[in-house]
Length: 330
Ligand SMILES: N[C@@H](CCC(=O)N[C@@H](CS)C(=O)NCC(=O)O)C(=O)O
Image (cartoon, rainbow, N blue to C red; front, side):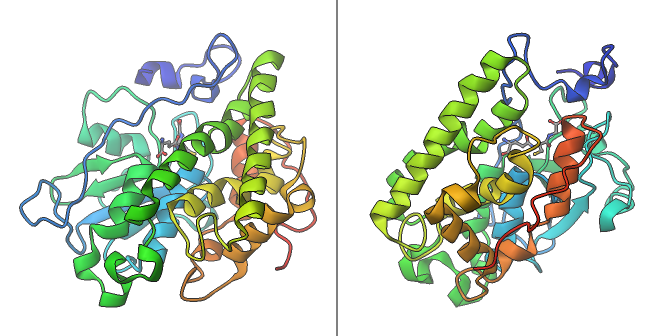
């Protein structure tokens, strides 16, 4: 999609809000910047302190993954965080100081995320998405794909961290241990399509047919996840330690009852009443503050941005009042 298309008003509102294709289906485009930070000092993007900046907003579940892992890994002093407003404007994500966010881009004084994309690539022709991992030295975007940014964060900066924070020294082998990689990737694949992106395909569908073709597999997949936890009987999806699969699922399920259920019409069942295993798992991640969670899930969760941000994204003028409690106690 070109810039002019993105900002042009097509008659029923700015084009940026038109998510569905002509057939009513929402199709997420692949991310463009796909380089990797590496522990190798001679690589294109070597892991260094004070060199990389993570741009995000608190509403976005993809960005949320990267924010969680930055905290889980104790990378707060190594990777700078820039939080933008969670309201999607006709010009994309902006800096405006609202909701305790940055007034302006701290590096260049930009007011729009798109400016950062054009600084990196003057001919850029995609959507201006968060998260963005920016390299201050080469003044470019390293990567804008959350699933890859979190994998970099798991280990690329480990030599700069205390021994106990390094993946090799973690009980259970870290967030993406060799012996679980196949199982984690296999689960991530269907969870991405049917759940993480499934809620968007449901919420942004513009025909009844497209809506139904996504909402049914979404709930079948939540049933499958519920059964997985029930059969395994473990604390987390793959045992007693948090893995990549837990982080990726968390950011969708924590938004489910407060936003997707109402705003995206994912209202066949609720996590809190219909999925006892998933509900327990979700509350453990949110509420427990210990060596495993480091309080990172709760600290990075912002319910207000989910209700208000998604309402704006579907151009609804009313923000839902309920549910009475954002997340039930453990
Ligand atoms: N595949 C990307 C998706 C990122 C994404 O779609 N982010 C949304 C916010 S939740 C965004 O920035 N949307 C702005 C737009 O599409 O204009 C990732 O996982 O990082």
